[in-house]
Image 1 (spheres, rainbow, N blue to C red):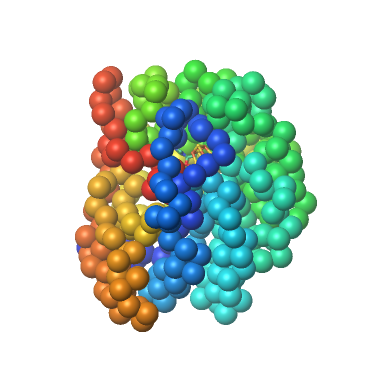
Image 2: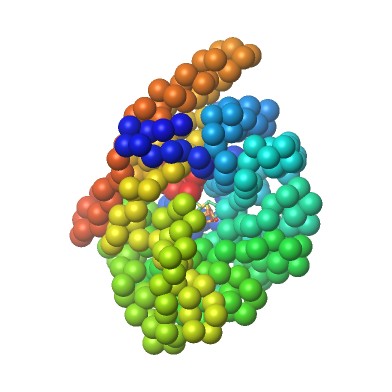
Length: 327
Ligand code: SAM
Ligand code: SF4
């Protein structure tokens, strides 16, 4: 799949649910509305969708949400999708999770071929963590991270930099991650969906975050790119830190990904409205001809990139929340 800007699309993020057991203040509003379960694609349908993208050249598949590990039957889906690891059609099958249920599932995920996992963790202070997630328990997430590491799964911790919540704790979070052999990636908050707080109050430019790390360590820029938006540095203590800067440094030129929601909506860009309905063609025929042409048509409309901006009083770039698109 090659888009109109010559970018090869080889990475699918597939959301398996819009539901979540947490309510992070930067991700969704307190009273988040979730889709009726009847609107969700079934596990067979998610599997068929993934298979269609893999046939078309997707080499990396990430399950996300909402919280993917709250979807009933998700381990069965991972088990089915792992056939694409076994036959070499996929290079990587992975997940992004908040970690609350990871302790229960880590061994199964490792057995099924999951080699790396992203766990979102914004603070090591139990009270701050509970405030950001609106009620989450830090000990559950730490147990999940430890279970994943013990099962041999490499962990990358994702933290969204938030001015009033975790800015002062990011350096310690990096050190904590590095001691466990995990990496930390820090992400600038993006203006996707309305939340109670003003984005401008949450947002911290990555240059400011980086300066904080530079007070603790000497940082060396790494050439390493993983096909994603992160830029990496190595600390003089040997740890790796990634920076994702959707606002201060746009990363769209090398974009290799598309997203599909749990209702079968394909979004060609996280920050644009361009979308295609894949559920109707999926359901309209048992063979995949209609589905294949719907995917091709959508790739032909992939936008050049987002134009995120955070200003006082500005409205979100898109109305849908990250939990709905599949972050
Ligand atoms: N529930 C899982 C989790 O939290 O890892 C997977 C879905 S979550 C939507 C995926 C990622 O999006 C998380 O790392 C989260 O921190 C990030 N995220 C959510 N809303 C965001 C926003 N407005 N700006 C930047 N990152 C955001
Ligand atoms: Fe849930 Fe992940 Fe959004 Fe937090 S960031 S509310 S864990 S979907």
